[in-house]
Image (cartoon, rainbow, N blue to C red; front, side, top):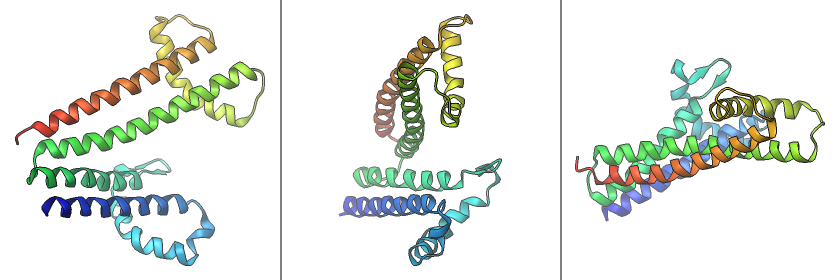
Length: 196
């Protein structure tokens, strides 16, 4: 009975989290704000989302990361509740496992985006090497710090051809994602076994 209650609460929190994500994404469309659906979503989500906007650390320059923090908190709670339902108590291990799961989901998302960007850039480099547009400039600005670090470390400071550096960085990021994925699974399993 208790487990079902915690699972249901976790599911409700996950649904609310999804509604908040939809609200955040649709807030980028100004026309949507003034529709009936936009006002309903704002009434449901804004009180919770606005609570996180008051913290200055969620604002970096012109970018507001408060929705990311707010949805992260919901995700941690949604991760912790089923663990409480299974064990019948709350422990530091369950909380740490939930926090680790949410942190990994953010890191994993970033790594997957980086891997996709590297793969797209590699395909572009192979098939259309001499084209230019603002999109490719922006993509290069996103991926070049990673390429510089990986190629600088692998080449010990010596320059290497761009395509080689691109392939090497792509392979390193894929390997990093795989290793981190299985490492997080192992550490979460360890956290669940903590008695406290």
